[in-house]
Length: 471
Image 1 (cartoon, helix red, strand yellow):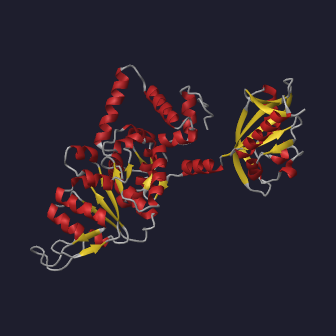
Image 2 (spheres, rainbow, N blue to C red):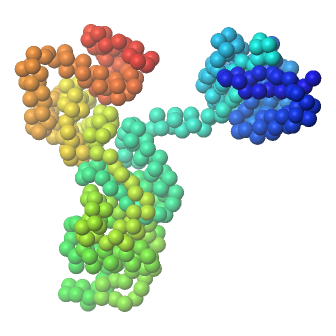
Image 3 (spheres, rainbow, N blue to C red):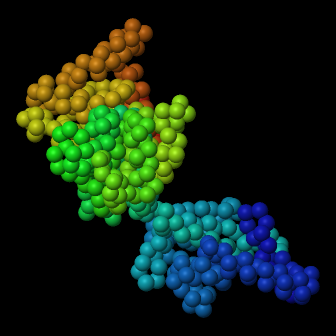
């Protein structure tokens, strides 16, 4: 009699084959599947000793089947923070698939992180006959998660929010290439800092990083600024002059506010993108340039194309890799870190010894609409530093437009019969929900220490564990 495994519900059943031929065919199919899957599979007997390992499990655990067979599961799959046998007993006890994410220690001392699935194995009579353990290697995923969770900056960019983590990852991918990048976002979001991060992370970091504001110059001046000019090209051109493209040779050129380019300059820029060559104003000589082009704009270029104000062919040449920089209102959890950075950077310039931002001032910063984005936040901190006295930046030190938003909220709260306690509760709950009830992160958003947040939660009757573990 030959037995084979058959999947049934959340577990496996040992069944008898009808004929030897069918048995052998099914056995061959099962072995092929067993060894071809990417996940590691380990079968155990009813004493939790290893019976078989597939190829993926042998590679993952760095062992051979003849070395593992007959050994206890706890020796072959040694969990660092959990007991494998306890996990298996749970699976056998409840008769359901049990999953746990944990570390494994390989035989050579290396460590991997796996997602473990344990299922009960039945005999033909329905009795427990052992277990099947499936191991999925998630080491790389966890390393990436850890990197993203801990990363707060990228060059001059600041922020730990999810949207900033995604931006950092995209910029690292973009930096590995020489592709043209179109950076779009509202005014004040930090598009120039994004361009700087791309350049400094790229293979061109040792070359020049040249910037030109396309909206700051007239068409004729901008043409000369970009492409240079020959002596005598126009009145006042007393000598040859290189333009920004030649100055950026071997490096990166940022065309800021590219949406303001005139039709004629757009045509010339299109040629540079296509041919990688320029002609100086008043000259017929063609000069090759090795420049990576980054373009930035706060204007919706697709709408400009639709309205006939921007060339469609140039748009597609620029928009090889689009990068969107989120407005500050979509990443409010980054406001405390940004405010503290500006406070640190600007207090020496202002000649002040202000060391921190009061909770009330931080609440006002968190609640402001920030139409001017990060640039407006920087200006607000600089304004407060000029007005501030003592070691703490107070709410009354903030600019008038922020204070004008604070007063109506307080007045409407009292008019509605509410008390500041209600506003404080709502603010704390919002911070906790944003951080998935991570008290350390929520305290940072609120501008208080973790113990102060815990006391306020207790006073306001907010469960200290919330829906999660309330770390």
